[in-house]
Length: 188
Image 1: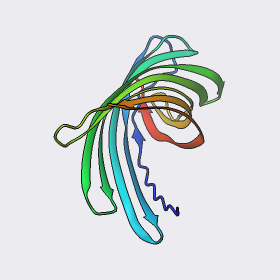
Image 2 (image 1 turned 30 degrees about the vertical axis):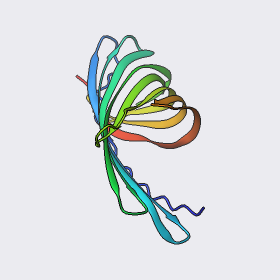
Image 3 (image 1 turned 90 degrees about the vertical axis):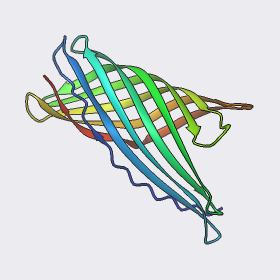
Image 4 (image 1 turned 180 degrees about the horizontal axis):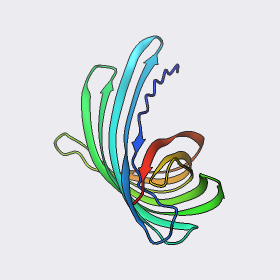
């Protein structure tokens, strides 16, 4: 099967982080992904996803941050016959970030999160698709000023457990940093 995937990622993160202990931070990300498939030169379907993921956290000390990502997503999926189904869902993911190293204005962290997501098709009698996930991601913060920093997070390693009615699956993923988010942070 020949598959053509067009991925447009626009993620702007406003994760107000702080290098000093005892500070709270808030922020979030916006995301958009579009994908289309072809089979034997013909349209085999497409999908688009828009997400918004606010975040709140606390800097415990120079090495350790704890926080909570929570979000909402909208997905539209079109099959080869042209029928479209819309989906909506929410997610929540408490996390711990550990600072591995600092070099001048750069800070390198590891982020471990445990997430829950529930997505449901916007049609009658649709059952929610529920996923529990565990993820590990590298994070880089670059301090531009005392208050502003650029923040990049890469999707890296994940383990997911999915269930929907009679369907259940387990997925282990190693992404090698092919996805993620890039943003700006403001600390206060």
